Image (cartoon, rainbow, N blue to C red; front, side):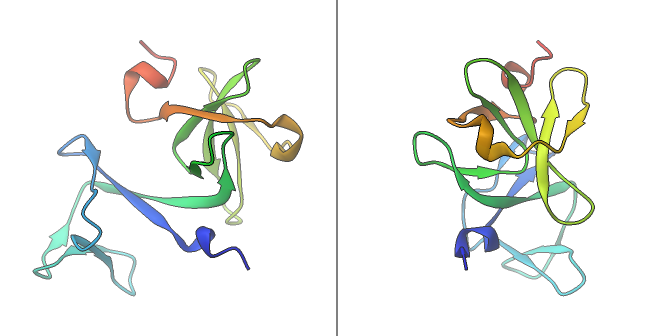
Length: 119
């Protein structure tokens, strides 16, 4: 089993950045986030690792913006727990097998305007 698919990262909508302190956030059984003091964290987005890496060996997460030199897309999560590619800027979701689209390179994330095709 690929243990990377068990990794997550957290985007803080209030601070407009990823929470980088791994001891700062915990996920409760009900899916809510708490900080190390046990206080509820609001306005955050949990992003799951796909278990795949880009051409530079960086782990690819849901929310990343990737390119293969011919197209740019965001990584989106499907209701079934899998992931796919969301076309930028239309937002259309493709269920193409990403293995045939490599090499992918992470160029940003959907939270930052400079990398999501909306600047």
